[in-house]
Length: 143
Image 1 (cartoon, rainbow, N blue to C red):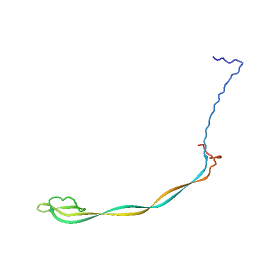
Image 2: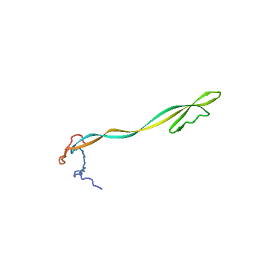
Image 3: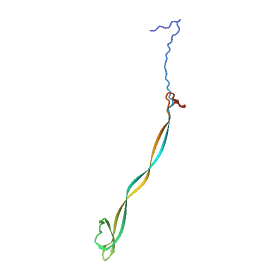
Image 4: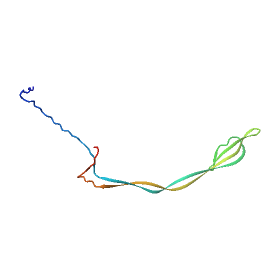
């Protein structure tokens, strides 16, 4: 138990202390640099193999009666497509009127072109050496 203070003694108080920390940041310039870019164009030769196909259609008259439709066929690299018509005779019969002969020719050509390609190069130059003993504070808003 604590004793009540005596009437002749003044109140005793204990003051409590508190430390507070306030942290601030500011921008410090330590030096400056200059960045320059340069675009360099160099020609490059490129090659490509180009293929071209040419189709020639030749009509070959046949003039022959057939019993059924001949199939589409290929002979020595030539595609043969039968063309038919019906002719009225005492009876209807198939007449092979003509054949279409399709020949394909493949031609290859090596093409060479010069194409310019660009490359960018950067140069960095320090404008002044920083003196770290005396940093420069940049004025403005705290970071």
